[in-house]
Image 1 (cartoon, rainbow, N blue to C red):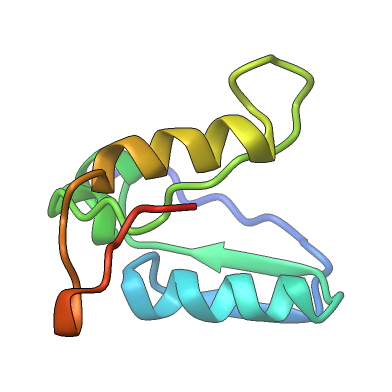
Image 2: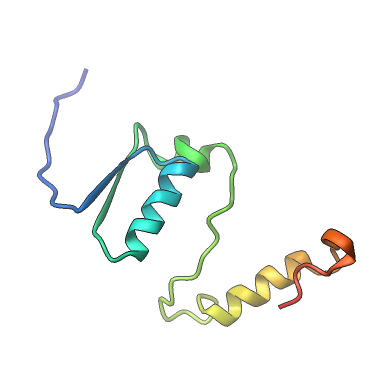
Length: 95
């Protein structure tokens, strides 16, 4: 086994696990204005919700790139749902 290392990190909330519940909890805490730390057992490439192919966490970060805006995100999501019908014939994906 490799050498064990420690890190001192100051946070308000520590979330153990990067799966769907952990990420939802982390987002709710961050939206409430607290500092959040997510700890997971492995590299994000092979652990948590992302490893299972779950793509529920689509977002925009407003990084300055043209594709990373609220408008671009809503247009993308709208194209993905175009033509689909929801309950009682309502249209999904119409933004």
